Length: 534
Image (cartoon, rainbow, N blue to C red; front, top):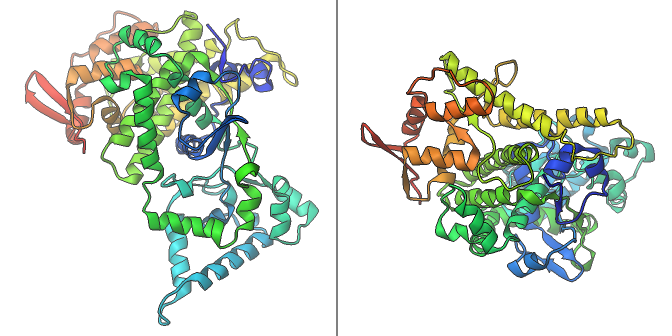
């Protein structure tokens, strides 16, 4: 097992020394960050200006290969946009009444007044109706944070101008200091609008981004050796890190500009043009950009980072609507987090050598499964996964140096917020594990996860035999469905070897694929899983 970190040696940093899950999985995966917020943070970094040192600044989604090759012991810094004006315009009306400070309301009124003055329309038209319509439109793009203060909410990442960093309103400080106007708030935005807490955008997206960079930093020979010893069967262009980097860069640029240009321009107008002092104070430009230092990921996690890059690429290449793609990318982020936790835990349990297989097995059952043996195998694989994570963060090679807590307290906190309970919470949020509450947790699929698996496994416009599809899902994600796979999962989870499992254990999976129009029955013995493609 190795606890080395990328891009910097984090062994002297507080979170690394005090939290075993952060030391093992990276800084950090956290229970309060939702799947869509993982995606928002990931795309926030991809869209931002970034730098590795004073001489290396870039605006592409990822560093070019030369920069990656030379990157050593320097943290990644990125410049997120706060977009306070756009959030105020869109979300003030649905934020809690007690979180609406009088200064917020006055600035909102000032923004809308200036916006109305800019609208050019026939005298018979109502400019206020135009403003209300745009408010409702942008409110429909709310992605996360319902019930929070307006500035702590997030948009769905439908386009570059809607991707914003986290901002926390410091209500107690405002009550204590009694600022008089909006200028007081933004002049001291660190005091009243805190952009450095990472409460909801809790750095999980940073870990995902760094895992991909860590993967693209690998040499072609290293990637080739790994792929030759696995059963991943990636496409030719996906087997070369430099080609994969180029493809992913091009596709992510398309995603960042997928929103209709008019909508993007209006968002930019509201946020930076109608009133520019706010963006100038919170974001700054040119030499004065506000850069945030990203965290770190485990060096050993480059393999799953590479697979995540492939997952994202294939979803970007799929023929999907903007909203469908966003939600499927959110699912991809969530599944990747728990896959990362599984693989890192397996490394901690098995040893420091690279894994040539997935390192765990998740046994899946039908959503409405009634057969007790299958439900029990699925339940035991979920519990075994939780147990493996529990044991992994207690590996003797993880050395803790807590300051305010005892080691036992640090372990309990990790179990609750950063390790086993995090695995369950993410899986339940996306419907990968049921029930949401109560006992008997087991793995299931829903329509969205099934669509993600098909798009991630079957090339666009291509097809795979049903049996090949299952094998590749197992190789990429550790999921098993049929009697043979369930028996292997039972052995992995120490459930036993004498369990009688029906031969049609996976009939439900074929039914779900058929219902979704993703299965072509060629004969009684041969079915093809299809990706409709473009």
